[in-house]
Length: 173
Length: 174
Image (tube, rainbow over all chains, first blue to last red):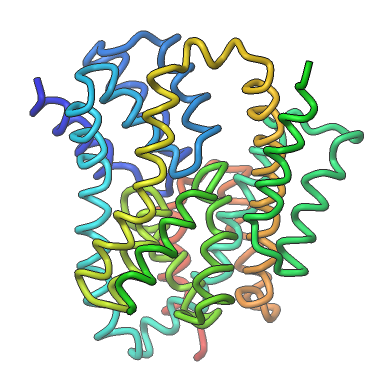
């Protein structure tokens, strides 16, 4: 069982390219349908929790699932499974990159990769904005954050702390 | 002490990375480029590109890569540990008590606000990176093509990046 947990998350970690949101459908298929470890409702609860916690969503959901299946040890194995493929593959790339970064071909590839990366941030921005309950009335809030952090280069730490405090203040009874 | 500094910085990044991968980018750029000057803007954009092309969460990929560049394999492990540790502590606490927590008004309110917050943070990451990544007409053309390919035609990010890399090798000028 413990080995199954580890191997399942190893597979999830190894086959998801493009980060957190790309991983969600695969994780759901593995843990709800294939393995039947948790129900779909439990998964959606976990996903909501994973999104409101700091850290990468894939790691958070593996913590949630691993813990549900087999407590602390299940959680640790799930997290290790999720991050080991990234750590190893990026280490190999980092080693190669130091050697080949100065090559003309690599440099040329990056002339197109740089703008492509911006597109990969712009698309989830639109998707997130649609799902976040954004309206004309509350649009000032993400707008102010974007300007304060993106243009004035204020550390995101301060807006995050203020948001948490503000949300607590709003919900006082 | 570079090791402690890396561990602490990535712990801080992990602790304040609400909203998943793309929202974390603003925090990483702040810390790694602006505060510590561990990477130049151009190197940072390369790290983001590589992180998106390799399997696994972007935050973990970026942490491992930057850690290796600064302090070898030990550095990469420390950064990965640092960025994961806050999730482990906080997510575990929430997992244990989620069924109770989700009924509480303050928890719901925080969740609602955090969603909007992460939209702002991703927009910030976009503003911070666009200056250094889209600097001429050639780049603007590639950006537009990639944006439409992923948004309208649902091309997956990996295929799109590989196609962009090949296009760059053929048409790019250094």
